[in-house]
Amino acid sequence: LPSGGEVESVLRTLASLYARGADVDWRRFARGRPGRTARIPGYPFERRRHWPERPLEVPASWFPEGVWRPMDPPVGRAESGRWLVAGDGVRFEGAVRIGPGDELPPGDWAGLLHAVALEAPDDLEAICRSALEFVQRAAIRRSTRIWFATRATPAGSALRGFARTVALEHPDLWGGIVEFGPGPEAGEAEALAAFLGGDSGEDQVAFRQGRWSAARLVRREAPRGTCRLDP
Image 1 (cartoon, one colour):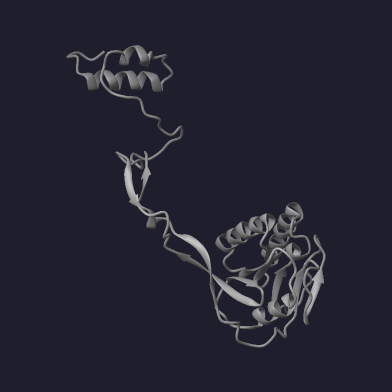
Image 2: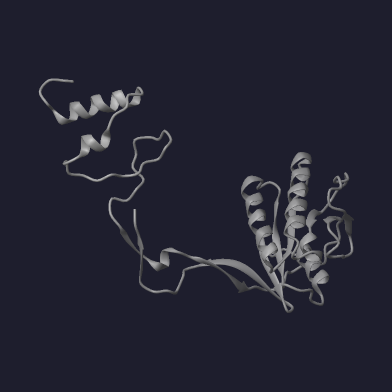
């Protein structure tokens, strides 16, 4: 060991030996010395700290939440172009249906619509598997933008999460997502066709009882006060 008894030199030497495979009894070494143990990542990392030195008190308003806000009905005409629709949950003029697993036929499509969740709103496996295959085929062919139609069910929530991932990983394919109520309502197909043919500028919308809403991120109003973040 280095002469002089400098603690830092001893620690560096022990650390070097430990890194080379030596069996160092750290508990015995630390016995009687001030300090505390701390967990560190088990992977290589840069010498930059990412942990707060002490608990933080932050305003509750730092944590926004997603809500639905009323929006004006889409302005425009019902989509006159041809739409390639996966699933049998919705029918409108210009829609060409394909079954789950079918190849995407060539053509000048106005858009792609995944609507399996409308016919099987609780079938999580069928919804997610067909959505993944639909996006994979569209990505390979660099097709037009994809829209997802879903319902307000647990399986529909999973599809929303998947759709948002598509928006991040394939922004060139992202069209948007339209959420309907848990069960069928009159006028859904007509409303969907009108929305797809309109120009609302929204990519996350909901249709309930004849009214349209758009997704918004707002400041959280409750609970008031602060939140404690422990390092």
